[in-house]
Image 1 (cartoon, helix red, strand yellow):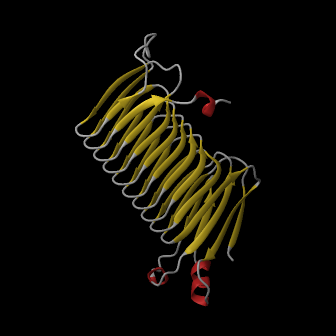
Image 2: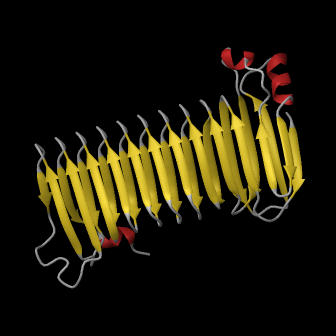
Image 3: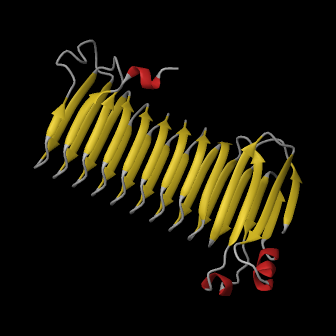
Length: 268
């Protein structure tokens, strides 16, 4: 199995280009950046293909790209690329059908995949992720988040910065959105477990919308649905001490429901 090592303790910039297989990135406290490549199928041709992967490291930038031979890809072969980088490194990954998995804490992430799933644990900077049919799952982010998916679901744990999420038919679920939020979906349902402050816009065509507002948050509501049921469980006195959040929700046939988040669920 091809293996590379490069001395590095500070965050680096990582670029990966891969068609099929899988990309696994692990960010941790290390003294050596490592790259391992393994073919997804057995055979001499697949092993030779893995040996031809181009890996370069210079001036804090690590580049990993597969050879320009596409004959093995057409016959169902691919590569599993595993990279270990220092905590806080910035990653840019572009794949066709390869899944992308990021463990540890990255400084930023730019990821694109047509049919592969994209998963990341934690990102301290900006996040830009685009998937056609693959699922997008991100644990927590502190910077601006832009996520797009056609039919794959979007699942975000905590969005500390501005959030923009768009999908056609995939479900969107957000654990906690702490500042301005924009979510658009055609037929996918939208669930936000905790919305805190700023301005939030949620719009769907036929997907239901369920939003929970953080406790002690003064909120201005503007809710409308043409044929769906609209329900707000917030008391009339909410927001009398000032407006922290402005929430605008629109659906065509989907239902809308706004309620309070459980304070105990987000304590500590």
